[in-house]
Every structure is written in structure tokens, then in C-alpha cells.
Image: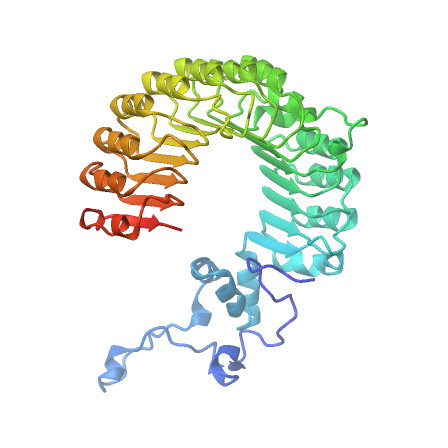
Length: 467
């Protein structure tokens, strides 16, 4: 059993010395003895000047209250804290009691040391349990024991813990009812365990699920949620789930949901999105990537009047129609990322709608889209807050379009151009325009030479180029 860099490498009982010892070997000083209990924090000025002895006002480290020592530890990195825990038993205790975050190698051997480990780290509130694919992970017994030792847990991350079952997750949830954030990936417990978490952890605010095997098995999948946590959930992130739609009741029932991310989850999501927007009114961020969603589902998002961030990545059924619907009603949109897969289903019409109706746009990323001067000119004219702009794999973004951006985007700070037909002429235009530009990233643009990259006008920019 090993621990990650975020957790101390020592366990209780590793040192036999205590704070009353006169000296201990310090591994960082080649094993030489150094004083621990009598270390003076500052010298007496009178003695240093050779004057008569004044009252003894020196303070040793052993005189510091535990609370002060714990504050000092808070400013140290994990490795330095681990070294400090080797100084003496008192430091070992204080360091353990002041550590709230712990990451452990969750192999099956962890079960044997859980009592000693959490006797030392008895105030942990954030715990990560990770196991690699080649090792046998902890089972229900270890997780239940941890839940008994750490009833104040607020965050739990599970990675590769394939021996955990619905039973263990359910008992854990009943013991750690204050859980606010759960992230699990490559685990095999299923809907019963997930529903137990949602029923017992009424304060849960963030749920992230990736490659959860049991719900992916198909026919026996049961609905997940909404449960008691539906009232508190603010973020739901689902990735690489065979049947992620079993989380539909949870998504629809989370009335205070602010962020929804769906990545590579099979099934038709139009219906879920359409029902969701009728009941969830406070959503601010939506991230849809590699899922089956059409313009009907995208258009329904126009009911989210508070929407500020929208990512449509590799959703081939989406067209200008859906984007126009969102742009016309989601006037608070700040960040928009679109990956059109070079299908040309989203183009100038959709971007012109964004330019006309989303004046607060700050960040625009276009991948595989072919905008022209028409939409870019309007974006530069109407979106006066546009600070970050990126074009990737576009056949139409050449020198004229870059000239247009240089002339119109006065507050632009960061620009990325990748795999576009841009040349040195475009670089010169940027150098004379965009007065606030501080970072320019150019990659795989064959027309940009080293001469264009090092022109005198570009000397003030941070330039990542030509790779």
C-alpha cells in the first residue's frame, strides 16, 4: 500500500522519539543530531552585543501552541509536511490533525492500515482513493471502515475501485451524510449504490460519473434519482456511459442545477433536454460533446435565459437552426465553443445570430467551421467584450479574415489560429491592429514563416508558433 504525493508517507509509530528528546537525527542533514526542543526562534539582542544578561525572553519551538504549529504546516507543500512529521511525535500528531486532504493508493492492502492511518488523520474532509488497472482494489469492508473513521467527509473521489459494490456504497453514504462532492470513475457499482448516495447525502452539490460499468450493462438498468440530493445538486457531469439516460430523472429533478456536462453518453438526449429546461430554470453552463442531440434539443436550451457558457462539440446533427434559437434568447452568453466536424452545418447564419443577440460574448472557439468576413465583421462590431478567439481547422479563415479581426476586435487579448490558410500578411495585420492583444498562438499554418513570427511589430506578443 502506498500513498500519493498529497498524503504523508509515514504512519503512526514510525518514530520512537518524542518532543522531550534533546536531539533527533535529521535525514536532511546527513543524520547529524540537531536540537528540536530547545531551538531558539530569535536571539537576544543584549547577549549578541555582549551586554549584561537580560531576562530570558527566548522562545523555543516546543513553546508554540499546537494551533500555531498547525498554521505553519498549512504553508508547506505535501513533501515538506511529510518531512516535518518525522521531527518528533508532537509534530507527527499536529501535522496529522491539521491535514484535511488525503490521497491514497486504494489497493486491497489498504484495509489493514485503515485504523492506524485514520487515527492519525482524523480530521480528513477530502479523500481520494485510486487504484490502477493491474491491482486489486479495496472492497466494501475497507470503504465502510473508512466511513466510520471519517464521518465528516465532504469530498470523495473514487478511481478504478472495481471491487466496490452497491452494498458498500450504500453503507458509506449512510455514514457520511455530509458529502458535498462525489466523483467516481471506472467503478462497477450500479444504480442502487448511486441512488443510496442521492437518498442519504442531502447536501450533495457536485456529482461526476465516468465509465460506471454496471449502469452500462443495459437491460437491468434502473432509473437514478432524483433523491434527497436533487434540491442541492448544482453540477452534474456524465462521461462515457453506455446508458447515461438512466440519470435522466436526476437531471430533470435537480431544480437548482447550474452546470450540466454530457460527454460521449449514448442514447437520444433531445427529450431529456426538452423536459429539463421546463423544470430547471437556473442553469448557467451546458457542455454537450459526442452525444446524440439534434436542433430540437438545442433549440429547447433557448429557454435557459441565464445561460452563459455553451459547448457544442462533435454533435453532427446540430445546424444553424439550433444555434440561432439559442442566440436569440440567451442574451447573457459569455463563452461559446463549437466543433462542427467540418460538416458545414453551422456557419455564417448561426454566427451572425450570435453577433446580433449576444453582446456579452467574451470567448469564442470555432473548430471545423468556415466563417467568412460577413460574420467576423459583425462579431467584431457588436461583441465589444470579445477577449479570447480561436479558429481551428477552418478552410475560410485566411488573411482577409484576420485583417477583419485586426480592424474590429479592439479588446481582443488572446488569439489562437491552428491549421488555417493564414500567411505572414495576416500576422502583419494583427501587429498593427488589436491593441490589447497579449498572446498569439499559431500552429500548423503553412503560410506563416519565421519571418512573420518575428516581425518587429509582434515583439510585444507572447508568440507560440509554427509547430
